[in-house]
Length: 196
Image (cartoon, rainbow, N blue to C red; front, side, top):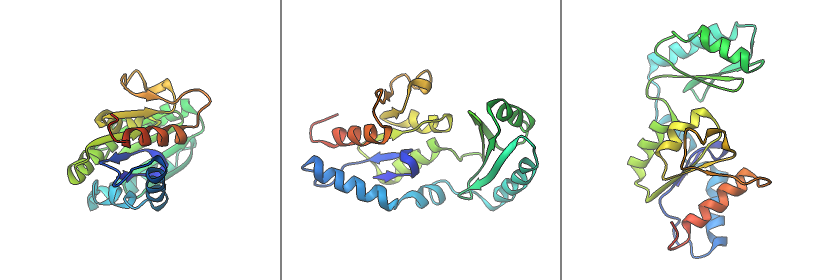
């Protein structure tokens, strides 16, 4: 099983000896707490070549100088993230750097992300699935940068209906239910013997 930060990726090949929901919950909880595959997901499965790392630093320096960017950073040595003052500022920031090859850019609310080629959650999930050969893949995500990963999943889980037009088969968290609880309950149901 691979889980990344904030429930964004779940690979569920099979919970070993999961004879009860309590045992399955203990196994899942321990793996979530340990985040044991998080660094591997980011570094081994994706990997940013050295020349692109320099381009990320250059991009970060230029973006950080913008007045409408409230914060910017390189995340896990993989991609550039910028938070803007509002959604309109994020759109302006994205438009200003739209031609900044070779990066793929995504806007999500007041946030802008720049990814080097081949660095996206869908690619990471494909590589992880090839490596671990899961029986079934469940993914949870809440933003446009999660869509490539969610499309590769056997079951996609969403906190609300905003991404449903892009992911018509996804399951959406019910009103009044906490998204992490919805994800855990769904994973446990899927892990139960005979469930699909």
